[in-house]
Image 1 (cartoon, rainbow over the protein chains, first blue to last red):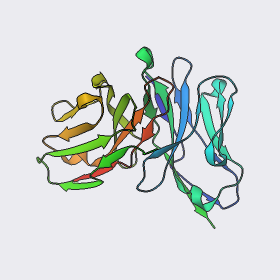
Image 2: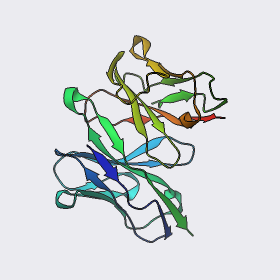
Image 3: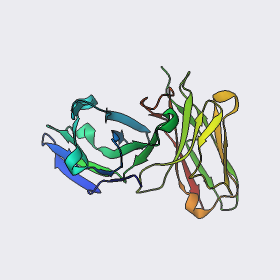
Image 4: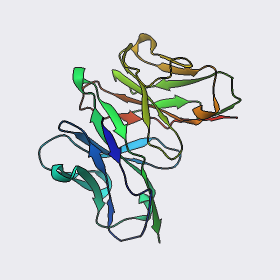
Length: 116
Length: 114
């Protein structure tokens, strides 16, 4: 069965420091992978997605993620964190694409805190 | 472009009561999704519509949950009767309809069952 694991429940970084959020997936075929961010009281916003091609994907707000098939990972990175990046981050794998429909399976999320 | 609208934003009910949530997707989006997000967990898909037909409702507890999407636009999700474990945020999302299309999420409805 498809699944997503985010090993870190909570991460704290200093403003200006680099960031890496881990994501591991389990999926039998070539995965479609996503990172979403959720700020308090708001819905999820897509940061970036990977379908095929270049394994290093650029997203919004200065985020990037790298797909590593050998490690079943899709880690999210940012070189310099801003206080406004404090939020919850969700990794997801797209499954059930038969018939053209996209079913997302989410990890449990990583809550990011940023110290000034 | 207006985003996905949901109402109400918050709802508090007692167990065994009924509750309904409403979602208005982005104009022109054929696919609509309802997710349940329990505190400390990621969202879980409850039901997926393509236009006004159900594509996937395998994780919808059909003994108490129901959903409809009349005329392929707005959608309502109902719980009757509610249980304590239904306390969660209910998220609605929509996409244009192709497998690779981005899903856009609404702000959610936070349900508390006492």
